[in-house]
Image (tube, rainbow over all chains, first blue to last red):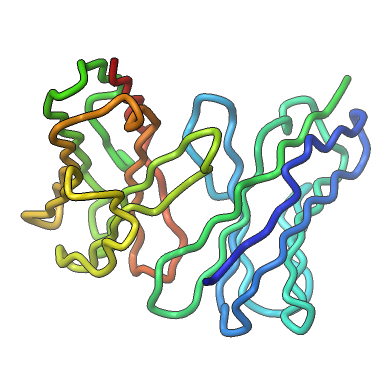
Length: 110
Length: 113
């Protein structure tokens, strides 16, 4: 059974702080890794994808991948109240559909 | 780009009735996915298609659920007969290929009374 694990939270951070969201996965053959953001009552929205070990930065977001340790993380710098949402980690192998974690709820207080 | 289109956005029906959810994927995408999301179980993959062919339907809860993709631009998810425990948000998503990033539609909120 392939699994993707996330701490459900809530993760609470003050405005301007760094939010760190973590995800572990069970399948060593996984090749593609994605972070989705889901606001309450809305659909998941893709915010980051990462395919190789290391860091990938996009604005205030940084995705980090460590295949040896089987984890992927998302850092949000200068967190804003508008970042308050549930963040879903998704993982897959070539040719298969994504497996989603249950998500971590982030709350940014002003 | 119009994105993934789903209809209806909300559906309220009585137990035992047939429910049909519809999805139009992003043009050019070859893979289509149906998900169900509840607070208890999170986002569950029900079935996905590659090039209109069902590839994995192991997530379909039981025979009351069926899905079709008659062409590259249209898919349906049908529940017959519906039960209160089917109440959830149903998402359709599409991607260029199954292993690539997926783009979600707005979802259909189904309530079965």
